[in-house]
Length: 492
Image (cartoon, rainbow, N blue to C red):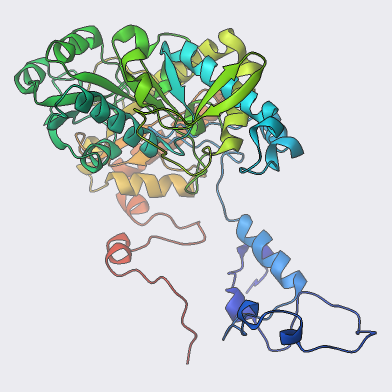
């Protein structure tokens, strides 16, 4: 039997399992002075006791361990990341190089403003550009993620209504919205009422008119929504909300579809958040870092979180004296590295480049939609923008479900798209290729999806057992969620 294998195919033991007493990752020369007891040099409260069971390993073992683990990762520099509503686009390395400049990467958050004028200018220029891009009057760069941006926006909505004598009671959220919207509204003290979608995948206007009362603070609208559909009646929607004294909040996580094409401020939107780590190509994944700036119209500007960046002549300052502000939402000033990358991205693209981004993102999504129409069920025939949502309806007749399709894609070398979301589509497959993917890469992904469909029709067991070529095969995800094992216990 041929037992030859490659090092990257071997299982990698934990550091604890590689440990042996006496190993060390460093080597220091013998002391040429008398050794002093440590407690005579340092306060005893600062001295840490030995950690029981802490691994003892060599430097080469540490390096090889983490390098080998890194080869198991799928990442955006390796291939297509078609996660719908997450916009996992390629990150230009120029942006990374700029963000790593010592004066930007190493500045201390507590430094005096007089010594950080360049940093403040970067933030000021970005916020002014975001005003122009969104058609808004005020911007804060403070929120550290899209979800925190949502919270910021709804707290500003609440402050606006409180200043007028009534915070109101409800927030309306379409069933095609992002999943964090209800949480942001609830944390802000509101009750949530859902608005169903109509047969086109858009907000049901009759339901909106029925539920939009003077007790509703705002409508939280994801646009384009999670079906990848633009709310074509946005003007009428805004009119219904404003007539009852409510505000229009827009979840701008899908702004990649609108760049350079239209501006939320021109649609009647009062406040929205953006995701720099999605639309403006900063690192996204692994839990962060993120950045969720909030833009608003003039009536909401007084409630922006502090500090606000102001320009005085040729200098810049942080304005903390704002009586109506909702306060701080994040320590210091957000994730500054994300701001640098986003500004570098916008400036390098320019107005024409930003428009080309959305042109290409929409083209790529519709190319996938058209080529897969004969193989996967399309629940809504309404035109798609930057992403397309299919369902597993045809494959399910053969016993193949969305999760199986996703796992089989791993065997074929692709990261799966978003699955089972939005919830209004049974067995949803939500695909967003972004503008980063070439036609050749899209064709490879489409061919893989067609192959999976054909296998579902002829060899369904080939899919339901997938993946078989990955480092870890099919997991019991239900058991993992209900009885997670979160720490390593040595074998006795």
